[in-house]
Length: 424
Ligand SMILES: [Zn+2]
Image (cartoon, rainbow, N blue to C red; front, top):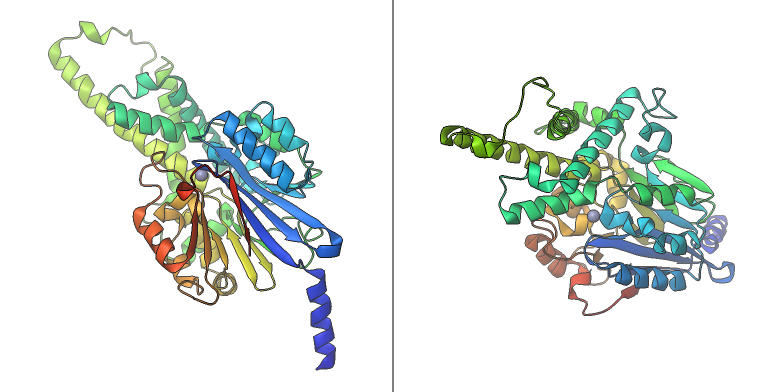
């Protein structure tokens, strides 16, 4: 009995004395700093995302200055959950990139879909990657090219859209364009890189002694297939959808550049010269194309969200869950694992997924959180969001549930506050 106690207390001493989370107001986006305080052995700082689609560069620059001060000029690790602009834009902005690089992180963690060799389309998939996985990354590249095209020449593709629809689609597409400069900056940073998948080692055990850090997502294609055969959940055939989207977008892009894949030799004429019945047909075709574009843009947005790194930090009785923008399909893998489910139950801090969209907080995950409604040990939820940038984000019903069942901190309710620090 006595022996057991000694062992336990030794292990305790190794862990951090306290954990704090700083949430920065970046409008529609994410920026979090986790600080693990090891008392005599100093502090370890880990940045999770730094990006926005709604605030000006000057504001983001103030955020970066504040977080540089908060981490005392050095980061131990950076996690870039996925390549959406609202999560990594600061890394691609001139001046801000240099400030972030100066924080000299030891480790940079990104999803496996960002592996530079695989992203170049190498035929031999590196490490754990299967050919199917590489194919999927290529299809993501193709869909991102489509988003780029939509942003570069929106009027052509969206001719049939109302101004409101057009603005909304452009905004969502702008999220998904390849943030090449930000990705390049992340690649330059860090002494080590970990491109992770569910169950992988993210390389933080040396840096964060006494803290168990688990990667819950994104799953690899093989892992997703495994789940699919176990469960009936392929209502919208999620992974298959990527391939369809890629094919459609490749054809659309070629056509929009004036190189019709179908009839390259047929001469074209101005619509203005067409008789009225032909104009009617064109309007119908435009409407059909717009419908397709909407589907592609939304599928692309979901696809990239589903590449989000999902991390679970366990330090003593503190359990912190940071799922980026992971949607239901990314969550399926973790939620099919009994051990992970048991550990998710103990979550004490929940970074609300995808700025409060309902898809990112699956009911089955929400139902697990046993600290909901608890008076003694309530669940703390952190919501970084701003209305009006993404349809139905944040979802009112979810915000209501967060308000009544957790201790909610919402950047939307901050008037002119740059950041808040929560000791957990
Ligand atoms: Zn996001």
